Length: 72
Image (cartoon, rainbow, N blue to C red):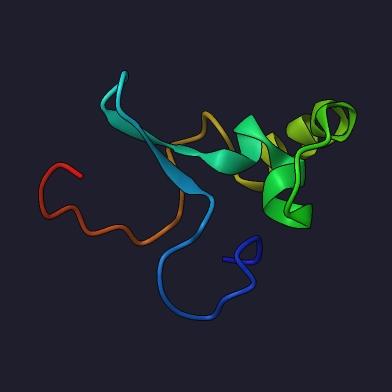
């Protein structure tokens, strides 16, 4: 939610990956795009390890409250 700069509603960084049929955190795909609004590949390489730590990637899932009601 901090990435989305919101207090309510869905996190804007949660992205549906149709080919894998699951959601991913967009912070791991492009941190700069979610934080700055545009893509900076060098900055992404620097921020990706931090983003993975911030969201505890691989440690049991995202803490976003997502209610699945069917496929997107």
